[in-house]
Length: 543
Image (cartoon, rainbow, N blue to C red; front, side, top):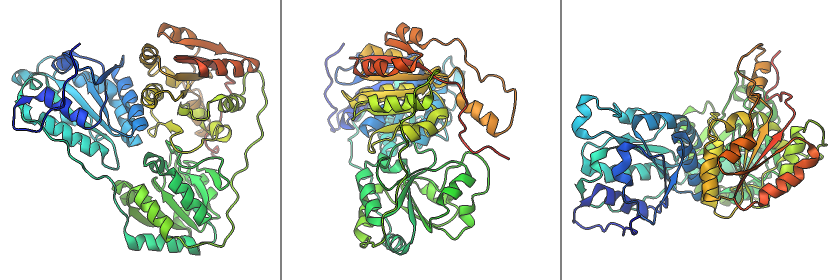
């Protein structure tokens, strides 16, 4: 391995495209590159520098998921190097999830040599920049080799600009050794202030409201603005709800004003908000739905405001006033404008009593036990969608940087994202709560965690099938659906085969001890919990 390379100096001296790129990565504070190597990337990977960590994933979708988790942990763009069209194809599912998560990623992919591209060369990517669209904010194969560093710089600035998201640069194999000039890293501001008149109107509406509600979404936690959000809620004396499918925790769920989680069903969401004369949606769309139905809130007398850093989310909002701004300046201004309000603060949702043990292990008992066993500063990465309603009841999250899930609904993100999160968090324990079906989409991510001895505990909820699909088949009143059962999976053997310590728990009496050991293990551990396979209902049943 070569000695560390010094950052490229911004002089007129000619250097290689590769060295100019590494100079940019260092200037942008990028310490890791995630990838699975292919032949068209070898000139970039040769003589790898000591000061940038190459994180090997065993499949491209896992590489994207790891970079996504790492980027969310560090609040800096994740950098990924993929293999031509085949590698990008494997990665597309998690690229879509990163797009929905609004995670900043810079994705580079190898391309065949420019001289043989007209001959439809083996491993070429035809119209490479079109492949990941529309789920990247910027996509390009530079016209000239010397344009590659500037394209990567633009990709970084674009990825980091709210609303954040993935970007893509295709790089032909022979470009890396080409001569170019260094590209100087620049400072680009990322905060956008709100319209003053709109903010005054919002503050007045909150002050005059009788029963206001704040609906908080993942944008608040992404902006590290949860403390500000709490201060606004307390001054406004408003009930606080979580937006449907929020992928992060933007408000402490034990707070006395916390009202609960909104459903992605139009009717159920409207019913929950019916008593509020003002609804202010902060850091989320208005609203994300999953099933059809009539949203009566849109034709009621409820006043709706929205604060969002996403102009598209503002444009598609069907009703109300949208304020386009980033969270910190908007919430800071709102806190300053709000007068002292005399009404009593609303009562939040009551915490439920501890669930009882049973055989087979009830999911509610398992989740409550896991919540009590986790260290106070632990981070939870979750991909167990059929159990999310029970989790929301029995695993209240603490707020800032405590909870992450996928905003896309696509499986295969959670396990590699937890690996990236553990890498980015350092010594803080990361817990990956994942369903048996979800885990099998990207089980190979365990290898990376085990090789690096990351402080990661993977807890697989094994109900022997796709629980969410079982639930939807009931809600939609369809019968005899094939492919919902997953018998015969042994996650202990799978984990041990990837180098992890693992144990299976089948009895409630074994659960607390197994979790305590796994959470204290010096490295990566897995606990497979066999739970009751009863089907949870995610939405109210039709008819």
